[in-house]
Length: 108
Image (cartoon, rainbow, N blue to C red; front, side, top):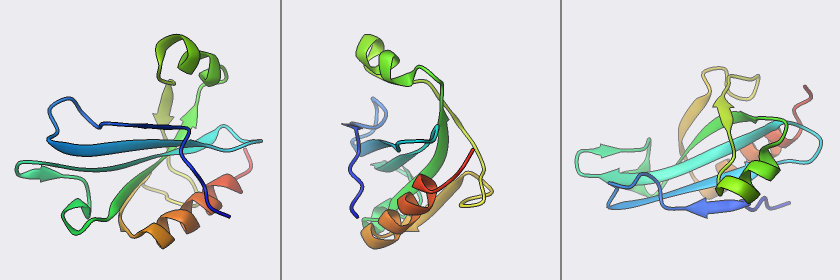
């Protein structure tokens, strides 16, 4: 199964090259914020090699209506069994999909 983001947008206004993808999964409030950006000397983990950085997030209960009203959902970064520190970098596309699958299986 391939997971597709429900929001894809530029990451940070000052980032010269950047993208953020937000993922949500049915049956759980967990999701993922996936970024790749290079902004001068700063970059996401692995971006200079074309790789992704992923943060496990937990959405607020009414996040879908927030997207309709504000254009963006409210969420918190969280650690889980998938990623205890909350952030993992250096993911290629296949590793990203595997990690998204693990997050989709999380039970609250």
